[in-house]
Image (cartoon, rainbow, N blue to C red):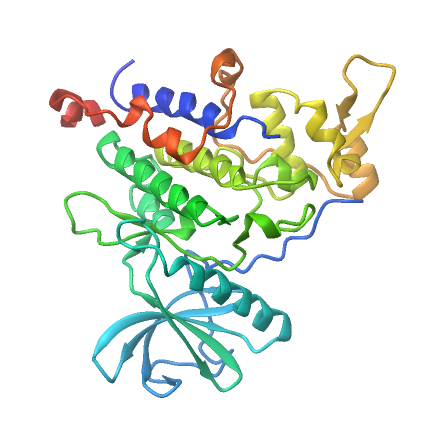
Length: 365
């Protein structure tokens, strides 16, 4: 193996370490995340190009949208600085979510945003009844960055620093006891595409929380990126972010998501096919385990994953095959089946200095 194929296999090894299993009916998804390709109607919130938000932030463009509201590019007319403003709708539930995000962002202020690879937050202001969050303006989402390469995956010389920086961000989040809970390419921003070495920052702390405030069964994360603990409704901690980072690693290498799916059932099916049966101790503690598994005390395997026909009969949902790639080699790497920490990632041999010939154009082909 050589070039991108070698890198692809190395990412599979790392994926196992990131995504090893950690110690009602399907949950509803209620995420407030930014779209990679906004189609926001400027009149939906009464905001258009030229609108003044608060006292001195003039809207220049729309950057993204979500159920929370919209993200705009604005010029601060006081200092002529360009920033990104997240405008939250005045809906009571979204206002509460915005206040919780501010609570998390206040805690992150003790961290250096550049050294920790976390978006810089400049505070908040009110626009009528809407809460507006002021962030540094970054260049492009990692999702779009991958898309610009026709979803063929990135070369090793780019992916290595990206993963290192994301592990660094998670390490620092863990140092202040915060779980991001929605790590995915659209929530990772490239700082400046024109720089010789790609720099990234983690954004969107809309559903982040303190590890001490985690509530099992809470709907967090995004289908296809969230860990089994979330889908099953078991207790969780910052290890769920490592699961997501492992999936991001494979997506960077291949250009496509490893576990796409429209429902948690699909994703669990993909995980089991790739990484094997989930451990009994995890299934026994899940609030939603009965939604996807059948318990049988008479078999050696206590829990059996429901067939597509059984799940459809109970929920009227027809499972779909949505994967572009299928990995079946992870089971052979039993010695690595441990979800490692961000600090262990930063020390991983994958990030050791690379010989110059390994970074040649031929090795990236």
